[in-house]
Structure formats: structure tokens, C-alpha cells
Image (cartoon, rainbow, N blue to C red; front, side):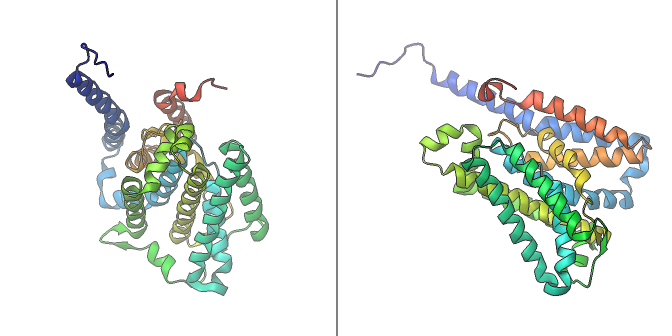
Length: 331
């Protein structure tokens, strides 16, 4: 026999759910967006030439590879993990492509992306199967990629050889960098995947509660491996973008982008505890990271202030978004 609570008010419950959803939307999108506008306003106030076509083109060019790193990293953070190897993967991919280009031609792009996917998938599988924290696995991968890149290049930069696709990637149409177009298209494709496919639902389920996802029949190990593979592929594309912009590869050319990439993810509203956020949040956060990077330069500030600001932003953003009940004891 079902007993109905006379004090239960369905409309009141719906109203409360709407309030919770509104607060979450505010925290995830509106606040980061207003923060982005505020940063742009401050830069414009002190440097009016920031709104010039030349300056905006420079911003768009700088944004493309960083946005790729941010969006890829967001998928791993969405499942409650973290990938510390993304920046080193970008450097390694750039180095590898330049080395194999004389032999493979532009088909080397597929080789680089395929190898990145395999490495990322292996990271996720090891993380799940061996029950090793993701930051440990990815930090180990960082060391392997960093050492390998330095070994195969003898720690020297190498110029880009004859290529058709890479220069095209670094070109512009009507002042819009092709790299930015690629980054936006990749973000849209990933967002649609998250919204309309089983994989997207499984990623959110694993991030929200891995144990509940297991009970619901989600293949958690496969989902984690795919998440890391996506992160690595996006990082590899970012590495190719760096080559297209500079015309050479270096074993450490993207290593300084790790902190901005993580900042972009968490400042955009993606919770490091998993299950909250998305591609849209990552894009806004990535733009904030870009504005901070370029803003300190345009305002003539010491470059050291970038890392100081990024460090403060990481701590504050994590403090505001982390789900402490899910983690339990903080160590």
C-alpha cells in the first residue's frame, strides 16, 4: 500500500529544482562569462588598441592551441580525473611530426594523432585497471614523453619541412586564423557528442558517481580510457597548431601551457571532483586564460605575474566548485 505524504507539494519541489538548476547555471556559465568581460574591459581601459583588428587577430591565434588543450583536459576532469601530460603531449606530437614528415608527408598527421590516441587510451586503462590515481599515471606519462622528445631531437629545435596542410592550418581567412576555426569545430563536435550520444551520458555518469555508474551497467574502464584518449588527441592537434604558427618544433615548446590549460578548465566552472561542467564551460575558461596571458603582456607587467594569477585562480576556482561530499576526506 502506497502512503502519500499530505505535506508533499509537487509544485514546491519543482520550484526548488528550478532554483538549484538556476544557481548551477549561474555558477557554471554566467559568472565565468562576466569574469571574461571584466578582464577584457580592464585590458581595453589601459590599452585601447586591444580592440584593433591586429590585436584581436593575435588573440585568436594565441587562443587556438590553448583552447584545444583546455577542451581536451576538461573531458578527463569531467570524469573526476586529471591529465597532467597534455602540454608535454603537444610538444611531443610537434616533434614527432616534424621528424617523420620527410618520410610520411602530411599523412604523418594521422600517425601522430593515432599514436596520441593509443597513449591516452593506455593511460586511462592503466589508471582504471591498476587503480592508480590519474595524476600519478599522467605525471609518469609526462616524464616519458618529455624524455623521449628530448632524446629523439637531442634537445634541439627543428624546422618544419615541406607540408601542405600545416601551413594551411597556420593561415588566416578574412583575418580569422584557421587554427581557431579548427578549435571551434572540434569543440562543437565534442559538445554534440556529449549531448546526444551514449558516451556523453556515460562520461557524466562516471564523473557524478563511479560506483552508481558501475551498478547502472556503464563500462567505467572503457569510458575512462576514451576520455584520456580524447584529451591526448586534442593535445596532439594543439601541438600541430604550434608548429603551424612557429614553423619549427621544440621538445619543450608547449610545456608552459599546462597551468593555463588547467586554469581554463576549472575557471570555466568544471569541478575537479567530476560530473559538473562541459565543453561550453571549458571554452569560456580557456578564453579567460588567454586574456590573462595576453593581458599581462599588453599591460607591460612582469611575465611572472601570469603564473601568480593562474595559481590564485586555480585555488579559488577549485574551492568554489569542488564537491567535498563526493571526495570525503581531503588529503
